[in-house]
Amino acid sequence: MSAEALLSVRSLSVNFRTRSGTVAVLDRVTFDVAPGEIVGIVGESGSGKSVTAFAVMGILDAAAQITSGEILFEGRNVLAMGARERDAWRGSEASIIFQNPRTALNPIRTAGEQIGDVLARHVPDTATVIRAKVLDALRQVRIPDPEKRAKSYPFELSGGLCQRIGIAMALSCSPKLLIADEPTTGLDVTTQAVIMDLIRDLAHERNLGTVLITHDLALASEYCDRIVVMHAGHVVEAAPVAELFAHPRHPYTTRLLRSVPSIADDISQLQAISGSLPDLRRSDLPPCRFAERCDRRIPACDAAGLMLEAAGPSHTVACRNPL
Ligand code: ADP
Ligand code: MG
Picture 1 (tube, rainbow, N blue to C red):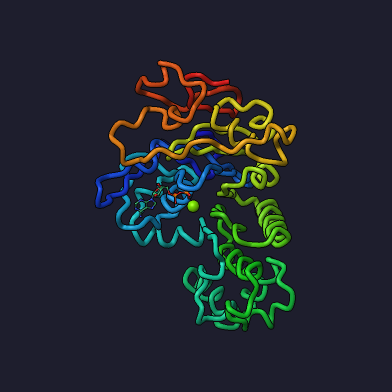
Picture 2: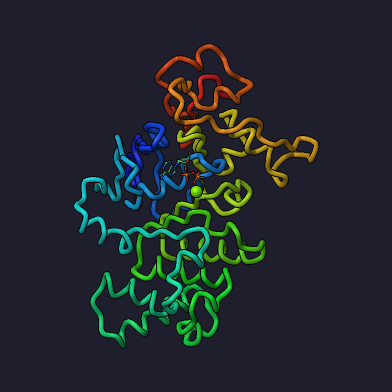
């Protein structure tokens, strides 16, 4: 792990038990997040982005099993924490916000009560102090008229305001790490930009290590310092944004880049990503889970032992025939 990492996910593998057998959903996922850095995790739907986020936060469902790997937070292995220590860690040191902000909130508690609940869980304070902190949290996420909004129920608030409440809850105990799992999917384009600007500004002001999970590479390119590309439970490539766009090495990354209208050099190059993610229940999955969709496949791709390897300073790629 690099000396300055806030979060270091090392070779994390996660299986799910299903009726049709065990599915290796994450396979040796590895990436770092430095303090204040915004790291994008991108990939098609089903590539394991949310499972990665839930594993880091310790909120995987009961069918999931972490079979190997480490999750280091400031050098401490969070997987070795006891349940109470992990609960205290979640919320006070690391927080998550979700897609569908309205359903992530409790429909029968006001915005202010929900933020207050998070504060009270972590720091014992008088009701008066908590009320003041709630208003401050609402101000920090730029909610106009916080006194009024504190008394609103989720159904009285727009999707964008609900997500700001979610961010206020996540940041109320001043964590060092924020994971945002598709935080703007389902919001209109203008609101998306407002929420993303807010997340970026808060990350910079608070030196908050941030993981932005999105299927939208254009969004990630605008807001992230570094991008981690996932495909079918593998990290296939990771690099600083400018480097990834100038010198993509993995064939899947180039396909993702060509599928984004604002990034493809000219519209005639715009292409959909052909094929679909392989069925992870298969027993004959090739070592590279992209091989069957890849136009650069060579015999070496079928040899075991595929790993993420250095492709330059702070650039890694897992490919036997990179560009
Ligand atoms: P993403 O967030 O990238 O769209 P996910 O992390 O949600 O993808 O899912 C990754 C893979 O894990 C998918 O193939 C999905 O079907 C599988 N998966 C997620 N949750 C479960 C579960 N509870 N049981 C079985 N498989 C699951
Ligand atoms: Mg997801």
